[in-house]
Image (cartoon, one colour):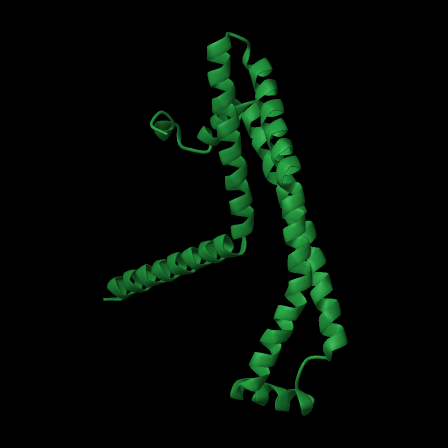
Length: 189
Protein backbone atom coordinates (compact mmCIF):
# COMPACT_ATOMS: atom_id res chain seq x y z
CA UNK A 1 0.00 0.00 0.00
CA UNK A 2 2.83 2.41 0.85
CA UNK A 3 4.53 1.61 -2.49
CA UNK A 4 1.37 2.50 -4.45
CA UNK A 5 0.97 5.72 -2.45
CA UNK A 6 4.60 6.69 -3.06
CA UNK A 7 4.19 6.08 -6.82
CA UNK A 8 1.03 8.21 -6.88
CA UNK A 9 2.77 11.06 -5.06
CA UNK A 10 5.77 10.75 -7.38
CA UNK A 11 3.51 10.88 -10.46
CA UNK A 12 1.67 13.92 -9.11
CA UNK A 13 4.95 15.67 -8.36
CA UNK A 14 6.15 14.99 -11.91
CA UNK A 15 2.93 16.38 -13.40
CA UNK A 16 3.17 19.48 -11.24
CA UNK A 17 6.84 19.95 -12.20
CA UNK A 18 5.95 19.47 -15.87
CA UNK A 19 3.10 21.99 -15.63
CA UNK A 20 5.35 24.53 -13.89
CA UNK A 21 8.07 23.95 -16.49
CA UNK A 22 5.62 24.50 -19.34
CA UNK A 23 4.30 27.62 -17.63
CA UNK A 24 7.86 28.94 -17.25
CA UNK A 25 8.58 28.27 -20.93
CA UNK A 26 5.34 29.99 -21.92
CA UNK A 27 6.16 33.03 -19.79
CA UNK A 28 9.67 33.19 -21.24
CA UNK A 29 8.29 33.10 -24.79
CA UNK A 30 5.70 35.77 -23.92
CA UNK A 31 8.21 38.17 -22.40
CA UNK A 32 10.81 37.54 -25.13
CA UNK A 33 8.32 37.77 -28.02
CA UNK A 34 9.84 40.95 -29.45
CA UNK A 35 13.30 39.36 -29.53
CA UNK A 36 11.85 36.26 -31.21
CA UNK A 37 10.18 38.43 -33.85
CA UNK A 38 13.44 40.26 -34.55
CA UNK A 39 15.37 37.00 -34.84
CA UNK A 40 12.66 35.58 -37.09
CA UNK A 41 12.80 38.69 -39.30
CA UNK A 42 16.58 38.40 -39.52
CA UNK A 43 16.34 34.74 -40.47
CA UNK A 44 13.73 35.47 -43.15
CA UNK A 45 15.85 38.26 -44.61
CA UNK A 46 18.90 35.99 -44.49
CA UNK A 47 17.03 33.24 -46.34
CA UNK A 48 15.90 35.71 -48.98
CA UNK A 49 19.39 37.12 -49.51
CA UNK A 50 20.98 33.67 -49.50
CA UNK A 51 18.49 32.28 -52.04
CA UNK A 52 18.98 35.30 -54.31
CA UNK A 53 22.78 35.00 -54.09
CA UNK A 54 22.66 31.25 -54.82
CA UNK A 55 20.37 31.74 -57.83
CA UNK A 56 22.52 34.59 -59.11
CA UNK A 57 25.63 32.41 -58.68
CA UNK A 58 24.10 29.56 -60.68
CA UNK A 59 22.88 31.96 -63.37
CA UNK A 60 26.18 33.82 -63.84
CA UNK A 61 28.71 31.17 -62.81
CA UNK A 62 30.39 33.63 -60.43
CA UNK A 63 31.57 32.43 -57.01
CA UNK A 64 28.98 32.78 -54.23
CA UNK A 65 30.91 35.42 -52.21
CA UNK A 66 30.82 37.72 -55.25
CA UNK A 67 27.15 37.15 -55.96
CA UNK A 68 26.30 37.56 -52.29
CA UNK A 69 28.09 40.91 -52.19
CA UNK A 70 26.30 42.03 -55.35
CA UNK A 71 22.96 40.88 -53.93
CA UNK A 72 23.47 42.89 -50.75
CA UNK A 73 24.52 45.98 -52.74
CA UNK A 74 21.50 45.69 -55.07
CA UNK A 75 19.08 45.13 -52.16
CA UNK A 76 20.57 48.08 -50.25
CA UNK A 77 20.34 50.25 -53.37
CA UNK A 78 16.68 49.32 -53.85
CA UNK A 79 15.83 50.19 -50.25
CA UNK A 80 17.75 53.47 -50.55
CA UNK A 81 15.93 54.32 -53.78
CA UNK A 82 12.55 53.60 -52.19
CA UNK A 83 13.38 55.78 -49.20
CA UNK A 84 14.56 58.54 -51.52
CA UNK A 85 11.45 58.32 -53.70
CA UNK A 86 8.92 58.11 -50.89
CA UNK A 87 10.85 59.73 -48.06
CA UNK A 88 9.37 63.19 -48.54
CA UNK A 89 5.84 61.84 -48.63
CA UNK A 90 6.41 59.73 -45.52
CA UNK A 91 8.03 62.72 -43.79
CA UNK A 92 5.04 64.90 -44.67
CA UNK A 93 2.68 62.26 -43.24
CA UNK A 94 4.68 62.15 -40.01
CA UNK A 95 4.63 65.96 -39.80
CA UNK A 96 0.86 65.94 -40.29
CA UNK A 97 0.55 63.23 -37.64
CA UNK A 98 2.69 65.26 -35.22
CA UNK A 99 0.38 68.26 -35.57
CA UNK A 100 -2.89 66.31 -35.57
CA UNK A 101 -2.08 63.88 -32.77
CA UNK A 102 -2.15 66.35 -29.84
CA UNK A 103 -5.53 67.65 -31.02
CA UNK A 104 -6.87 64.11 -31.32
CA UNK A 105 -5.59 63.23 -27.84
CA UNK A 106 -7.31 66.34 -26.46
CA UNK A 107 -10.58 65.35 -28.11
CA UNK A 108 -10.25 61.83 -26.71
CA UNK A 109 -9.55 63.22 -23.23
CA UNK A 110 -12.65 65.44 -23.47
CA UNK A 111 -14.79 62.49 -24.53
CA UNK A 112 -13.50 60.32 -21.71
CA UNK A 113 -14.06 63.09 -19.16
CA UNK A 114 -17.67 63.47 -20.33
CA UNK A 115 -18.44 59.82 -19.50
CA UNK A 116 -19.45 58.61 -16.05
CA UNK A 117 -16.28 56.60 -15.67
CA UNK A 118 -14.18 59.61 -16.66
CA UNK A 119 -15.93 61.81 -14.09
CA UNK A 120 -15.36 59.16 -11.44
CA UNK A 121 -11.67 59.09 -12.35
CA UNK A 122 -11.53 62.89 -12.18
CA UNK A 123 -13.05 62.86 -8.68
CA UNK A 124 -10.56 60.21 -7.60
CA UNK A 125 -7.72 62.34 -8.97
CA UNK A 126 -8.96 65.42 -7.11
CA UNK A 127 -8.95 63.42 -3.85
CA UNK A 128 -5.22 62.83 -4.25
CA UNK A 129 -5.33 59.16 -5.26
CA UNK A 130 -4.14 59.63 -8.83
CA UNK A 131 -0.89 60.07 -10.66
CA UNK A 132 0.90 63.44 -10.76
CA UNK A 133 -0.44 66.30 -12.88
CA UNK A 134 -0.24 67.06 -16.57
CA UNK A 135 3.32 68.38 -16.55
CA UNK A 136 4.73 65.05 -15.47
CA UNK A 137 2.49 63.07 -17.78
CA UNK A 138 3.78 65.12 -20.74
CA UNK A 139 7.37 64.45 -19.72
CA UNK A 140 6.58 60.75 -19.35
CA UNK A 141 4.97 60.76 -22.79
CA UNK A 142 8.06 62.41 -24.31
CA UNK A 143 10.33 59.89 -22.64
CA UNK A 144 8.13 57.06 -23.91
CA UNK A 145 8.18 58.54 -27.41
CA UNK A 146 11.98 58.87 -27.39
CA UNK A 147 12.32 55.31 -26.11
CA UNK A 148 10.03 54.00 -28.84
CA UNK A 149 11.92 55.99 -31.45
CA UNK A 150 15.29 54.56 -30.40
CA UNK A 151 13.86 51.03 -30.14
CA UNK A 152 12.44 51.31 -33.65
CA UNK A 153 15.71 52.65 -35.05
CA UNK A 154 17.61 49.84 -33.35
CA UNK A 155 15.21 47.25 -34.72
CA UNK A 156 15.52 48.72 -38.22
CA UNK A 157 19.28 48.27 -37.98
CA UNK A 158 19.24 44.91 -36.22
CA UNK A 159 17.10 42.93 -38.67
CA UNK A 160 19.13 43.76 -41.82
CA UNK A 161 22.41 43.26 -39.95
CA UNK A 162 21.27 39.83 -38.70
CA UNK A 163 19.95 38.92 -42.15
CA UNK A 164 23.21 39.76 -43.90
CA UNK A 165 25.23 38.08 -41.16
CA UNK A 166 23.22 34.85 -41.41
CA UNK A 167 23.15 34.86 -45.21
CA UNK A 168 26.91 35.33 -45.55
CA UNK A 169 27.64 31.77 -44.39
CA UNK A 170 24.35 29.88 -44.11
CA UNK A 171 25.99 26.44 -44.02
CA UNK A 172 27.82 27.33 -40.82
CA UNK A 173 24.57 28.16 -39.01
CA UNK A 174 22.65 25.22 -40.46
CA UNK A 175 25.36 22.80 -39.29
CA UNK A 176 25.44 24.50 -35.89
CA UNK A 177 21.67 24.20 -35.51
CA UNK A 178 21.80 20.54 -36.53
CA UNK A 179 24.40 19.85 -33.83
CA UNK A 180 21.80 20.85 -31.25
CA UNK A 181 19.78 17.77 -32.24
CA UNK A 182 20.54 14.15 -31.38
CA UNK A 183 22.71 12.41 -33.99
CA UNK A 184 19.86 10.05 -34.92
CA UNK A 185 17.57 12.98 -35.87
CA UNK A 186 20.05 15.15 -37.80
CA UNK A 187 19.57 13.52 -41.19
CA UNK A 188 15.79 13.97 -41.09
CA UNK A 189 16.06 17.55 -39.86
